[in-house]
Amino acid sequence: MSKVNLTEKLGQFSDLFSPKIVATYNDNDIQVVKVAGHFVWHKHDDTDDFFLVLKGKLTIQLRDRNIDLGPGELYVVPRGVEHCPKADVETHVLLIEPQGTLNTGDAGGAMTAKKEPI
Amino acid sequence: MSKVNLTEKLGQFSDLFSPKIVATYNDNDIQVVKVAGHFVWHKHDDTDDFFLVLKGKLTIQLRDRNIDLGPGELYVVPRGVEHCPKADVETHVLLIEPQGTLNTGDAGGAMTAKKEPI
Image (cartoon, rainbow over the protein chains, first blue to last red):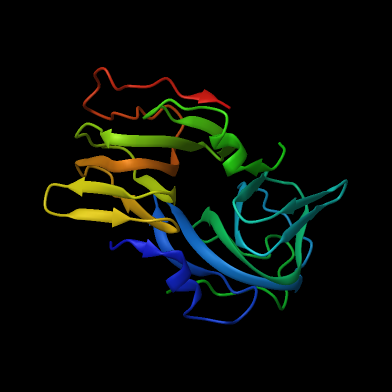
């Protein structure tokens, strides 16, 4: 593989809530995603969910509290825990999930995205 | 878990080549490390090795080329590939490795660090 410049990758697309795969680590996809607005409540029964904010501000809503993340802040949602990301401004995030993980987890629906390499 | 502010974590220690665990993702340790100077040549036969530079400049020497990483750039060293990180200035890196992975891989020796949570 070549090195990955995250800013360069983020400059190559503009669609929201559509993760792009920038690298692979063992059986995990390293992804970047742009988000704005409200995602869907969902959980992943078989995996934790890694979020690192690169730009903007992300709120990971949990059922009992919110996790507010700015640039350089990360949070790992434990497997099985319902969560719903939202952002008031366009926010750029580094995501790590096992290959084949649906972005919408158990919820499915219209926001389910096909993750493509970029 | 609470959210992790990487700058805050990096402000809590000054030792070099001594990764600190800031979070867990599935069976992996999410770590921050400060590096300056030359590490040791090594490889991990059972895992890829994830590097994301947060500050400074990291050169991951491979046997056939160098990978130069600045802030916001990442590289995944494939399993089994010999590598030796080095940095001319103090450099801060986010590392991901499976729990129990030795920082010095197959090389062992004096630079082998006990990874502690921070």
